[in-house]
Image (cartoon, rainbow, N blue to C red):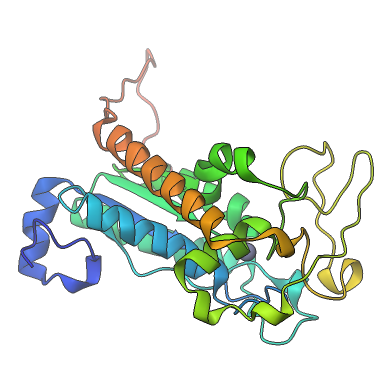
Length: 273
Ligand SMILES: [Zn+2]
């Protein structure tokens, strides 16, 4: 595969890199987790699903994207009551992710996009992107793959809660790797629903709150995976892939404007924050 059409960042040599930097491919960083996903799904759900969406975008738009190896760990102390989960402290995660994006920027890529698959990483990847913009000459944004598929999912969903190892994630996993889903273990989560507070992960409830999972579920599922099907997963996957391709194209063309300083007198530009 030539550098122009190779979409996996670490399959390139350093000589290839000069060619793809000149092409200004958009660099995607998938971020997931290693985290319990109920009795029916493996711990790799968030990493596997977001990386699968990114890699498919790479296959379809290989002339304009590069996919970094994923960050497969995230903020997860709330899942520690379930065996196997790995937790990374927020400050460690932000520092680690920022080191990746700054390295990419250093080499000359000007457009970086973090594609998140683990909801609890959301505030952290936002900060990584913001810090990248402030500390480099490149632009970095974030998007969650699930947000890009939500409009399509709304039309086919049969359950009311979107949260964790639910109809959405289980359907997508059934589409991509059905042999890894323990189908006899698929069940309904034990959700806790109030008027303002709930275990739903969407923004439909005004109070943002996330309890320790050993406190609000016995099975590690919120939402209802019994409604999951591979057919729904295919629709979710196609929506996420085509949505991410649109995002990549807009992001690639987004202008990096010249910065203008409105001070009338010289500023103390030696100050570092
Ligand atoms: Zn998940």
